[in-house]
Image 1: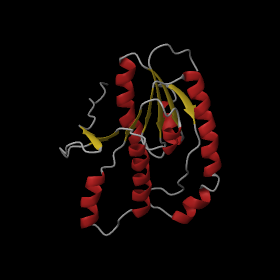
Image 2: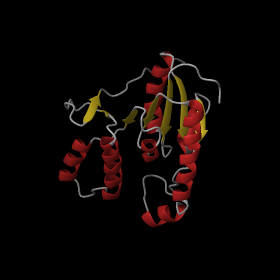
Image 3: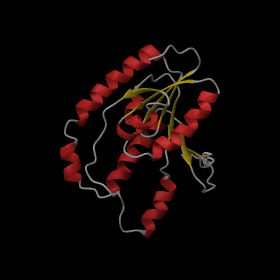
Image 4: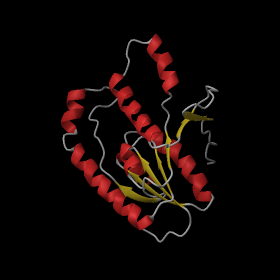
Length: 192
């Protein structure tokens, strides 16, 4: 890890797909342009995505053996039997990074471990799940995604309990309540 001298951000980003990474890199690039030093902790796709863009820490995350949005709870549970031990290992890795790097801010998408770190430092949860939109979805569709919803609800509950701002990109025009709605991140197509 390089020596860091400016304001510091530790970003903990999930690695299941690339959606969170692509959204978060826009935020991190703005912070970097304002002089922030950044360390990104992630696993799988997020680690690979950020590895050559920022200082990175590789974590261990869940494994999803299926492709194309098929989901077998039994296969996922079997593939992730050791996940609780991996999360304990991740926690100690992140504690060590916090001790050395001393972040001023902690950003996360929905990694629950972030809420256990540096509790006196500001945390921000940037995520794309709008609970109000989910309520509308439930009214019109049979499939309720109950497992995913309860997991995400538990993350939002932890964020609210620790007074962590929840930021959701949305075009809904909703007014902030417990969630801060912001315009979606739109970027230019890179020039060839």
